[in-house]
Length: 226
Ligand code: IPE
Ligand code: IPE
Ligand code: MG
Figure 1 (tube, protein in one colour):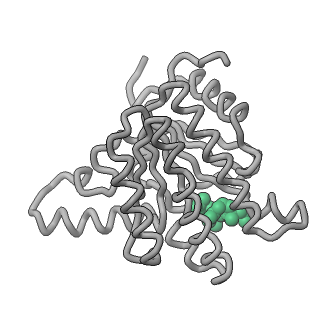
Figure 2 (tube, protein in one colour):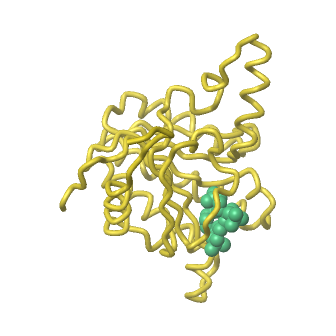
């Protein structure tokens, strides 16, 4: 594996295309989500190998609550089971696991699973892995603005759900869609965007390394003149 120079400190993913992946194989949409968990695992392991300290995934948006109950329930059950299954992988790889989003909307069982996994992995030093669940960028800004006003403060960043986490340097969206679908609206201010037609369940190590090469070739200027 050749390691690209200029690695991002925080890579975030809009994991998209699970449903289309399943449908194109004549399978139920949930099978695509199931296969997508393997892609998450591969990206997580590759990030640890490369020494990328933060990786995050948009797993379920506030708008996704509007899908059929069967799909929503299937996703919640899948995430609950994946969290149970991954504990040892996280501990073996030095991963600290975090969930951000409007957790009041999540089922109790899922919330208990999250609390447990966050607690058991809190000493992880190599990689912080964040799952955005029941998240939307507008929700985040709204809840931050409310708490900022209550505190009489003027800077919003410390009140965002991502306080203390560096803003993403790179945002990768799979499945060919070129939009941010109410993801981290504030935090993506200066992220580089990579859009790939690959569907999320097919996004594995080689696709990840290719996106990181693309990132390394970008010229980030942050509004300045070089
Ligand atoms: C992304 O895949 C996963 C979630 C949004 C939960 P989709 O379920 O959006 O798959 P497509 O876009 O319908 O193919
Ligand atoms: C974005 O994917 C949300 C997640 C990946 C969790 P969607 O499939 O929900 O986005 P739209 O509806 O195509 O914009
Ligand atoms: Mg989609």
